[in-house]
Length: 481
Image (cartoon, rainbow, N blue to C red; front, side, top):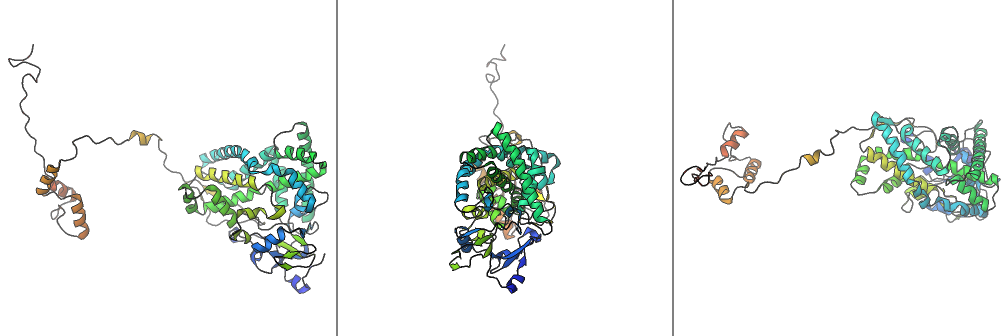
């Protein structure tokens, strides 16, 4: 494999370690023009592509193929390669298109909507557990158990397999491969995951269900795929699904820092789907996709490039292009993440449930300490639920205002008589008070209450006419007998 870089240019390439940045940001080199980076595990330098037009021209062209640098990968997702077929991130061409067409109907928005009731149920249970304490850790108490419930329900695997098997394999796949044993550790994690799903698929053959594992096995078996290819495809989907955890955590943190955005949602000016997508565009996305290598006739935009040129697609600035958006965060072109609809549905459900239950929640730490990684997450993100005074829900119905009885308003002639006696109307009093003039009905040295009493005119009681004996229950001659 050849590149167009001179030895001097190679020495200037930046090692892309994805060390923690302040505020959980991304390395600046991912948004620089003509920047080159190297993987910590070694290998040739890669040209960073971050412009929207360049990115689409490369990701949508068949002249570019996955680099599959199995010996010097940037992340663990590159380790399996493309032999044997089944690992979708390493496949290209007709074989890749056939696999995506075989299982594509399992990853639609309708399929994701089927899981929404389970997401709501899981969110309600987690939020109920937080309520007595009034505080918690955003990842440990909400984001991770929510992700575990969603991923395991979608795959159709036991939830107790999340912590020992599924989550660690996903962390390896999305993590940076470090030098000195990093490649061996990544290979071991993939082999362990393949062995796990061999057992799961054997169980699904005997007792099929509606989970993705059983459905992918049935669809790929009908299409003529071998068991090894099916296992690799299922493992790839499993690792991809675990990306929901850091994305959900970053979306919640982004909104916790922006109460005005939440207010817009509660006022009906925006929807939860809109703010979730904005959070993805701003900071809740994996910044790069696996490296690509140029084939014959490859171009970057309109510029031809030599065969063998290595590029690293960067999504950080491309998603903010006027024609970009959250859809681009899942990868453009034929290698777009198949679980995008499930991820968006889960983000909408868990974000809405959290903030509808606790709209006044806030982070207790003014500054967060971040982990290393492509999509960095805090080491701890403690939050507190602001407790509001609790009222009986029926209090407003017990204190209803009663209608004013007829005759309580003064008649017009009474108002005029009160004005002649020195009463000052409310409007006149306010105008005089604003102008700083006397004549507000208050004497020198009088308090407000005394002035108000002075200005009032006491109504005299009219003597009642004497009641007739008939009206008192008797007759004109005397009391009734």
